[in-house]
Image 1: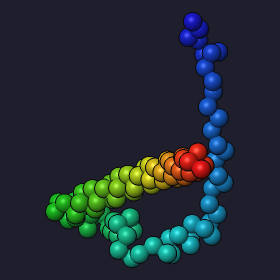
Image 2: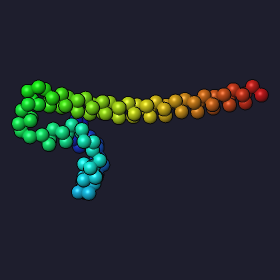
Image 3: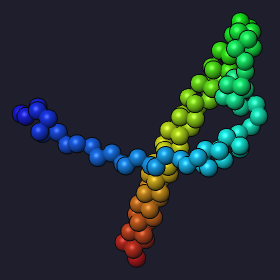
Image 4: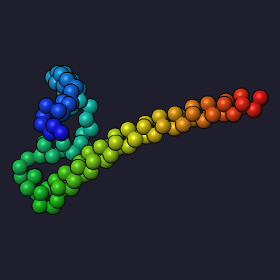
Length: 108
């Protein structure tokens, strides 16, 4: 057996998209809600951050953002699972239809 790198197939990665233009970035920033955690923390002074840090608001916002990202990733994964299951159900339905046609034609 050849366990060297020559025997392995290389995965071809898709090309990276072009980075967003300044206009696209500004559009995204302008569309953000005023209470977006990224902007509310980043526009806070150092003194305010010390106060926020002491009462846990920054940590709470960070954890909330992490939960959001994790939930978003889970939703994307489940979306893929649902699409796969839908395709499986369609294939099973088509197979069932073909079986019904076979049974009907053999009964005649």
